[in-house]
Length: 296
Image: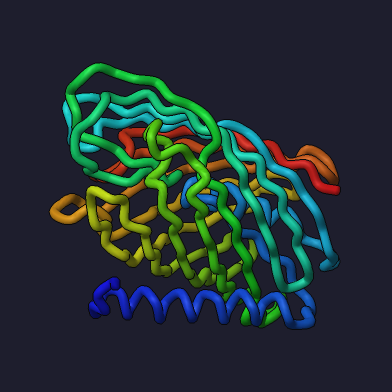
């Protein structure tokens, strides 16, 4: 029988709250505004550009996004870990809600063995080994998310508040080092304030990690601060600073800075590019990506 510890009770309460929010979002009738949700801070930053380029009457919408995301870094270890991540994301957006499913392909080149010293943004464990390098690829961890606009002050005020619940399913092969083999859960609030062509943003959230057999991961608070400037009807760009508490005990918290640009090609197609710089040993040294979205 599993012991009932304060940490386990906190995790149980969080999962109950997460389930309640998802159920409430699925059951309600929705009103006026669409919302966008993103995979990670650097992709979410690019997707915020999509919010600014999606002005117009609210309506139900389907879209598909794919592209490539590349990160490389030593994470405080002697050898670098390199990750290629290719998401296949299907998204439904209503007037005040959004549903999203991402099924990714992932390729990791890293030293074999060693202790877990960090968890990558795509859920893969980062190890401290200095042994032989190994490259593995395959299905990554699938991610499902549901979001709801809880407050929209309208165009006159420009204030918007979203809540998003997310579940990362352990679909990646743990034996290959593509994932931890455990489900993760998160809940976050996103606040947007638009003034003319500039939108400021702030995110605050809490994430519960499933514990792999050989280590206990900490539940963490995370957040981001940034802004986006709309240069015209087709183009926007911005900067975002992302931070997260340390997941692995006795390691650094995560700190990242991302710059991004978004280009609307026509009514149905968008292109997003971004580059990121890690500011701590818990982050990759650098990353970059290009995403293409088609609407239906």
